Length: 218
Ligand code: DX5
Ligand code: ZN
Image (cartoon, rainbow, N blue to C red; front, side, top):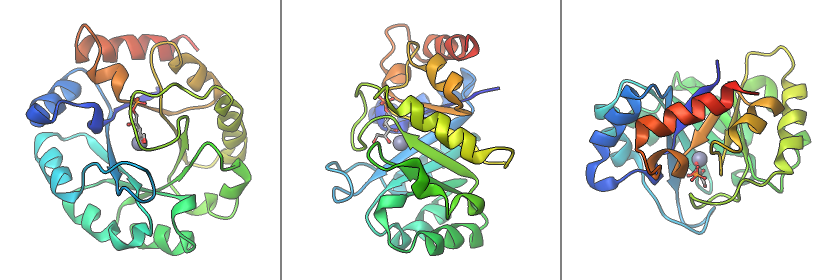
């Protein structure tokens, strides 16, 4: 079954714990935690201290998506704060294999993310070392952007590359009831959704149910 991963940065930070409980009770599978440094992406978001608060608020798996230049500097801090998965960008470090090994030595699941402009073949050398591939379907830095539909071909290509390996294919950016089905048809195992969940007019539970229904129609 496809996993749904609400993205924390789209939540109401004035009631973060409450919103984490809401997504957990609504049947979400993962909490997606977007850490942005203002260098790798043109936005500054949340860090390890906020992840500690999220950790206290939910039993769900927390995937920390590090949109951070030289992420090696912060992997230990996110692991200590309670992340279960730590995802670093192919584009963010010349020492990607070392960063992935650092994550695994801390006993965490390791993920690698690719921006829309990065071809799937750049995953070849690292694929056998990771637990998750995160395919960006928006240019990272902000929630609420439109799904970049040509990325569906990249999702299909990554699905072929993964083959029978136990690697999760996660899709992140612009996922909503209209795009969820296509992302799953292309090969997604995990759907990250921020705006579609936390800005849904009928609330979080309705949003999760609608995404679940859309994803099941693939
Ligand atoms: C963008 C982040 C995404 C984003 C998802 O840089 O990595 O996780 O917050 O939010 P929506 O679903 O609104 O695109
Ligand atoms: Zn993300």
